[in-house]
Image 1 (tube, rainbow, N blue to C red):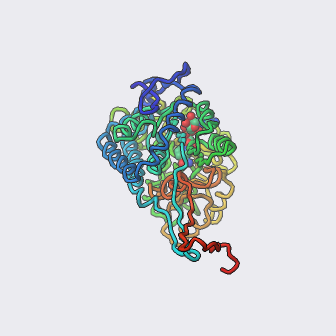
Image 2 (cartoon, helix red, strand yellow; image 1 turned 45 degrees about the horizontal axis):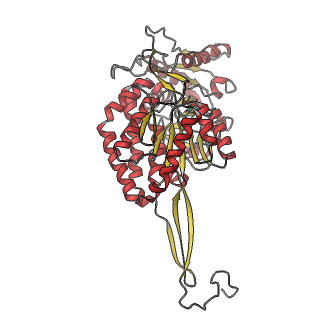
Image 3 (tube, rainbow, N blue to C red; image 1 turned 120 degrees about the vertical axis):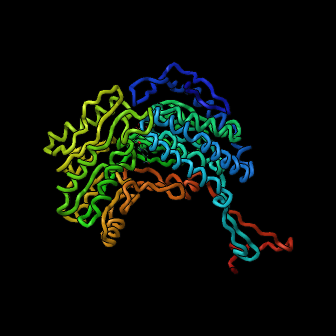
Amino acid sequence: MEVKNLINGQLCTADSDRTADVFNPSTGEVITQVALSSDADCDRAVQAASNALQAWKNTPIIDRARIMFRYRDLLEQNFEQISALITTEHGKTLAESRAELKRGIEVVEFACGIPSLFMGQSLSNIATDVDSDVQRHPVGVCLGITPYNFPAMVPMWMYPIALVCGNTFILKPSEKVPLSAQKLGELLLEAGCPDGVFNIVHGDRSSVDVLLAHPDVAAVSFVGSTPAAKAVYAKGTAAGKRVQAAGGAKNFCLVMPDADPDLAVKALAAASFGCGGQRCMATSIAVPVGGIADSLVDRLSTHADRLTVGPTHQGDSVDMGPLIRREHVEHVESYLQAATEDSARVALDGRRGFDSNGFLLGPSVVDHVSFDTGLAQEEIFGPVLSVVRASTLEEAIALSHQCEFGNGASIFTSSGAAARKFREEFNAGMIGVNVGVPAPMAWFPFTGWNGSFFGDLHVQGAEGIQFYTRQKVTLTRWPERADDFEDPIWSSNR
Ligand code: NAD
């Protein structure tokens, strides 16, 4: 499949000599190349989005919503094709790709309700004969920059909501996974999205820098690693734009002595090793509380060792696919090497010696991890679960206050009191109780805290609508007599 930019309703070749390889991580083969757009390509996309803005924001809101209804149908009709594309360029299993796409379609379904969601507020007779109301307006040209680990879902967190709010949009997908985004864009045109309203510019951080500096871009949604999120937030806000920037994570899972052990082991394995640990909500630290650590580590290692790991492009026969790139496998493996040097114990070693050119690495469980080491402090973003033992719930919760990140955290317990204390005191924005991956669905915001988020309004749900709109308050008075000059609000007689 050829990768092209989508500008002003046309698929077009980027005007650039710089390219990046796109791999099938299951086979290790290069499947295509993506041109990394030039400054001129970025500018053309912003021009197209700016030119389309006025007509789009004046399009009746129900017509904008109807495009999303048609888009939803097209996404359903093309569901298997898009899922297969995600698996091809990312490497996750087909089941994981289907689940990702479903989560994305739910955002489109949320966006279909925009006429109700967009409504303002009004109050009659706020002062004598004065009525007041507040209405929402779009912010303008919006930019979305997305990571490799959810090629469809993360872009879909952004543009369906931005577009129904009357904004135009430029998507800069991850250069590692450009194919799914392109298909999503083609379907949006087929659904009736007018030329220039939705645009795609492929590229790397240099394209991001050009788009971030462009005076005609009003708002920026970023999802990716913490260093990049910090940089985008700083540059975007310095250039006067509103920015929401979601970053990396180090997600904890506490297992209390009263937890159902079967549920805890299965959920923990799925949360740690699903998508090869390449989820921003993946569990990467297990904290067994009290005397259950030995048995939890044993059961978890046995369970994880039975997971089949292999190429995913030929169907659904494996539990876990490859990582995104060979260098990433090497990066993740370096933590297993460090574990030995840090006197942690590798209870399960994922370096299985695979007979494949794919970027494969099995699940690993590292026990007795000291909390001040890289295994506990850094985002590994691979199938490595660090076990940090704690004696009490209080001790386990205290660890979260020494962590740079604050995306998600779960507890497995049968005690309502423990669950409540955890929910109230754990230092992270998304909490699971007997749920392994507490990722909010489309109607709720994705509320990362600390170094996992920079900005004020998060993606998805009502916060998404707030982010992509600004409000205008109107005070209205129709005096009955022309000589009635007294100001009903500022008058001292009020
Ligand atoms: P990444 O930060 O390397 O890249 C993300 C996007 O930013 C890409 O489009 C890339 O081209 C661009 N980019 C990279 N460096 C940049 C820079 N310095 N300035 C501007 N743009 C830059 O992330 P990735 O490796 O593609 O994705 C994995 C990361 O994303 C993990 O850290 C993961 O936790 C995070 N993530 C977070 C969430 C969340 O909701 N918090 C969701 C998904 C992924």
